[in-house]
Image: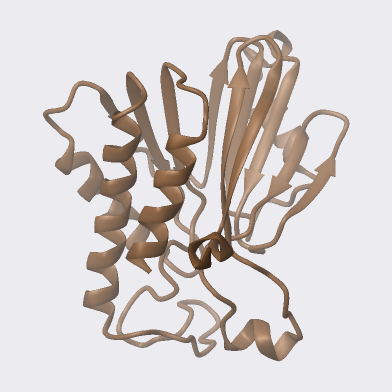
Length: 228
């Protein structure tokens, strides 16, 4: 797992534009499990795990700090933001606190330490929204973005909302914003196999935004590239 994550961020940083600011976002479910029960906290569905929770948690911490450190080699400033998912509702908060403490003396790293389930970033006339997706739907994202940013919404024309949760690539191009869900890097678990999913190769993306023009490029890492 750690080799895959390091390979992905190495590739994305090395092959994407050298922007002034890099925004690293964990959209939730960084960890499959949130405790030693190996089951989803709310529904109690049995989950696939590889080892003890404590071991997996340490790997998650190493992965997030490595991603920030790699981004620092190319970008002047790095902002880290995460949202707890339905699989890691508690652990997500701990990961955020750890990253903040790790880089507390680095003026080039900013950690969004808010515990909100929905977060935003305004960059000129471009606005980005982030949510896990187990609550807010992609179809409703534009209306919620407008309500939550009432004071500045009219200043934006390029609006994007990013989701995790479903762990698959899909787009809803709404009237107010473009909503997109993303695949994750991990292989298919037992639940996905039982549902009949077969060809979902893990990916991670770097999307570059211009303050006036919105998205201008994207780079994608595919786990199958590690076999080449």
